[in-house]
Image 1 (tube, rainbow, N blue to C red):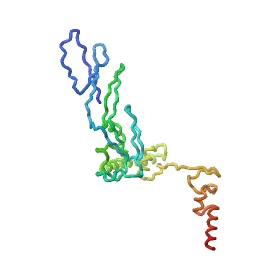
Image 2: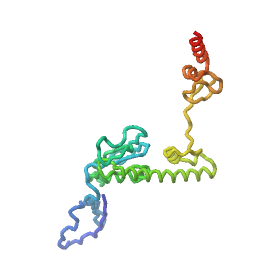
Image 3: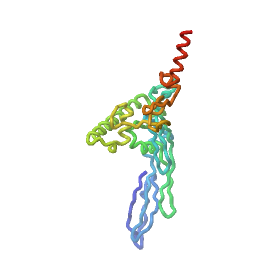
Image 4: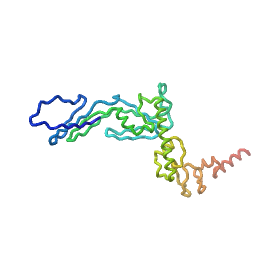
Length: 261
């Protein structure tokens, strides 16, 4: 949607014959505010510049949810599940076994505020919305499908583009870490790249969830059977299964009795 401002000199007191308007039939000319000696017109181009299909499919192989806000709505590009059903349906030709998330976009309406309580409504095509939303997400594996669903070639190209971008982020993280071993310089984007590719880096360390031991109050890993600080049994069943605690001795005594009996 292009907005072009044109200015013309004010007509003399006795105007000459008015020539036919040169405004193209595909544009709407709306009169603007008058100023001394000038008339200001606003010409709004309404011709479609892109594909005018009613629906456009956006596919994502990213493991992150994306929320994008525009004046014509808030859009959610869902994360691709790490595990689950493959993206291709049974019997669907040209599909892929690689999982992906899908978002269907339709055209939306919006308005331009011209001032003086004047508003100009217009329609944004689904393709224009998709290209606007994805301008910063292509490297993350988000792309517009040519058809209703992504093909194997499209998914392979998106994966290669995402992995190349993540490798650049990992190299950047290594450089920043070598300068001073500061976690503050490493962003979540760098950590996400390392985790997504399964690359182990000291700077990509993610703190593990810890629990508090009810006996001594020290922090221990969630789900452990025995506190490493005070030796308290935190999960009797699990401790007995691994031969720890009084439950294990009792279980061993019953086993010996059965053997002797």
